[in-house]
Length: 153
Image (tube, rainbow, N blue to C red; front, side, top):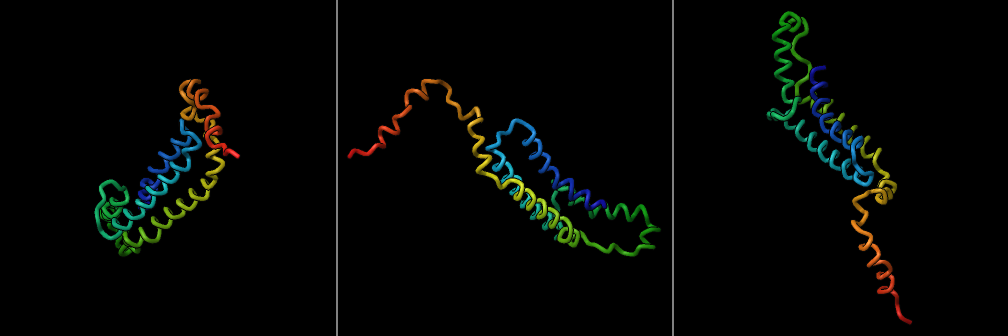
């Protein structure tokens, strides 16, 4: 339970930022870009989980504190530890069997949910950043591209 909570803290920290972007002033045309950035962060998180499972310390991850937490729990429940025996799961096993598969599942869900890039790109017409600053910018160049590209017969 403690290890699962630590994994979820690390994973959901990135998802919360993405969620805040979706609920804020993000334009629909940027959703795929933001989703792609989240997937990249989650792939990086998988590698960090693997390194922690192999014994490396990662100060930025809650998951790296799990082994110390397990030790503390065992020290405080000495009688229960004698009744239970040694822990049945190592930090490496937990990373490989729980943490990494759950992040892979989340990546799959995100990639499935944000595959409608053509639809989202069409919302660019509503993005005020695409509107010219002045009417003169639009009027001065209007129709010139068609005139220059016309072939003479």
